[in-house]
Amino acid sequence: MLERKEALEEIDNSKVLGGKGDEKEVNMALTNIRANVPFLHEITSKELKPSFVQLDNDGQHYSVLIHYALLDDTVENSKVIFFHQYEKGFTSTYERGDFYHF
Image 1 (cartoon, rainbow, N blue to C red):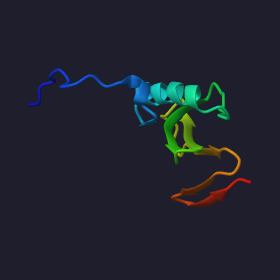
Image 2: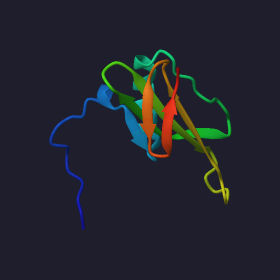
Image 3: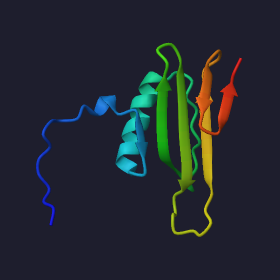
């Protein structure tokens, strides 16, 4: 049986720039990304929630990937929306192919 112990060191929540699955972590990452990325657009719907967020930064440009899932995750065959955005002039390689914005 595993027993929960206190963390060895405190995590700086302001450094969290990605999250998956855990609502608290995803929302924390989104809050931090909103503070750093000037072009971020988000989908607002009472039926959707962000389930994954990731910020990439090559030192000059930002790239943000957000996955939205149904708020009611008990629905069978539910779909996911992938929302990938980046600033003008940034070339990003994403696992499903290359994306270019000029």
